[in-house]
Length: 444
Ligand code: NAP
Ligand code: HSE
Image 1: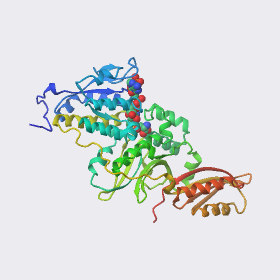
Image 2: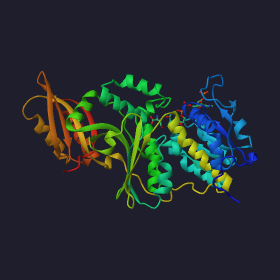
Image 3: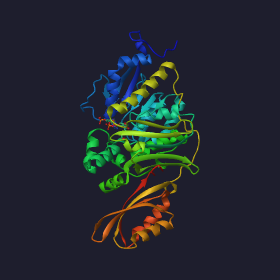
Image 4: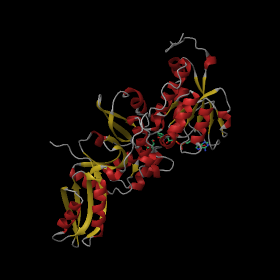
């Protein structure tokens, strides 16, 4: 008889132990070891079988590790792939190579795979799912987006009957931490990046965080799930936070906005648009108060309406929370013989459209000559591309030069780009200092 819950003290058949091969013993791997070791008894009861890490693959076996386990430390992947007792491979190495090859090989050999790897899932998701289907095994990746926040399972299952029109979120903990510190404490970019790395939020190469690529991978995964269409990281536009200056943060504050790095996936008549870029968010927007390493993801469905998922988007224990929940799910599927029930959910073929076709309002900061007719000349060039100005701030006059900040009404991206190319060449314009998209304020 199948049982979903065992009682404390009840005899559990130890020969049914579910053994794990862990690939990676870094930030997240350490958290996974801690949770599985510390909660061994509870998890055994919840699943109906003990879960045990048998082997851990690392690069440098001599490194000191902060979590205690009697698992064997190995440096050869074949020690895990060739071990028939290992039923679940948990990939927490990161990067594309060799992680993707190891996962694919594990799936081919009939092992279930749990991963936190957005690099691989946002690019090779289809190939891995096809193999999981062939091998009748599970492939779960909850921790690949939003760290500890449940978002993959909600999109795949809880919201599965909705038509989803939009997903918008703060999905990179490192940059949110950095922007929060820069906004609230006036800290400079490099100091705050070093702090985020020390806390284990940033990727080993933080370029991916700072340039928006980490968030692009995550929004591509979310778009695939939300719209049931395969979207890869190559379909996503990515722009990071490296150009955000203290001046922009201050102007934004003065105008009633905060600057956040957001991922947006929209579905409309043109198709699917997926992008990551800094955004001026009105101060009263729910995402504006998502600070530090916290992430939040908005989902708009036709039945459910607006929902928001909030929590810690990175770090050892929050991420390990999502990974170990996936392990539990796979273990339950093994116990109940129900593996591979929910695999790839991309059932349709919808086109994506490029950033140039997307529509947004813009913040444009310019350094210009301070003389009559300058604003009119700039407004004229913008007008020719149908870019209409909503508000203007002029400050900081030095030696007959001044800084102009314009906020436009929503307009097609390609129109703004064309106008700025002309404006950049105008003799009255010293410099286009920054251009940032703006989420419009709700009309009162
Ligand atoms: P990490 O701290 O850099 O740890 C990586 C681990 O993998 C290390 O133990 C390393 O071994 C091992 N490793 C790497 N390359 C290897 C190779 N070629 N052969 C054998 N072992 C190798 O990484 P992490 O921060 O835990 O991230 C792991 C995954 O979780 C990544 O996909 C990441 O994107 C994802 N993730 C991380 C977070 C977070 O907050 N950190 C949040 C969500 C998702 P050594 O220890 O010997 O060097
Ligand atoms: N570097 C990532 C972040 C970790 O800062 O959000 C979680 O994927």
